[in-house]
Length: 491
Ligand code: GLC
Image (cartoon, rainbow, N blue to C red; front, top):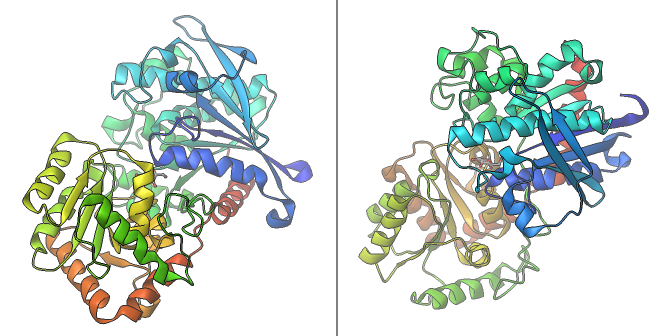
């Protein structure tokens, strides 16, 4: 790594602002530009030349025009060569490349949950990303791939660097955002691209030619999106039956918490709020609560605890646990506003809760980023009963907006929410067992502090608002990881 320039090829299936389905899009859209902006004064003299590569999904092509392709890649396959066009733009001077081709555009959605569409699509993308580096003569020190979609680039890199001097110095960091999504069987595809697949006896039988396990197997380093999740994936409860395999590689597994964009998420200047406020003017916050109550036709009362739920409605997020807990806690005074979409059964449960408690529960079954901001500024607590949560973003936003998280003590929640020692030091409430009873009990604890110890309540709000979960903090940790993995010189 001469001249103190670190070259990083960062590849992902999605990245904001181009395309964003979930948290991965936030990370891939924010971390690489942040790394490229780091100044030598912060990095011990390092300059990071990072390039982001994502597929040219039809959804991107509909919204952006990047002009003509900068080059066409030609991928060799036994079944016939594959031509893929590459488009380029930049984000604050950081180059971003988009890979186009029939396998990428033939499916309408970014993720189709159909192996026969998604696996060839992301396999072609992964092989193309490596080929692109070569065509650009951009010899990366680090390849950072993310989740199963780009796992095959990690696998192919390990093979290629045995015989291709171009990649001899490249080490891989494979970031796990969500372990249960494994991709699918890909042996025939790998063989088509000329990769002989060994039996890989280290892996459980089902996973020997699945994308995610192959990425985990070939990575020089595995990086989870929180230190606790890095530990959890080595246990039966969260390891998706890869826990033994992962535990044997624990010296190559660590975790870095994602950041929050503190400029974008700032209650002092957020234009969506009825009333801006900051940590020194918490009293002004109440106006947002009264406004939200009015918006939803709830009784306007600054003193009744207002609970918010903002979440994708799928099994991971445990919304059903929250709904049951609210039913158990019905003797306490509270109001609740629910926002989100997803699985029909969960949406229906939310509607039913509203129907059963029309005076106190309102459910907005939609995606609404502006409403979410008004809710964070208005709510007293946000409920986060995820069964597992690799990192999570909503607890960070809640804390930033003075809306105290009540969360299952897993993954990123456990790493970012502090509930040790004296309540005046807390930033939220963590519960250890994800059941409606336990959550109802936590609501009871929280509401007693809320009504009987308002000063402690405000201390918890302020502690949360003063946290630093900025992207810069995370980016510096990624840099350190890249330097460590680069130095390790794994064969
Ligand atoms: C996944 C995880 C979430 C994490 C995000 C970004 O969506 O479920 O916890 O915050 O990836 O890393």
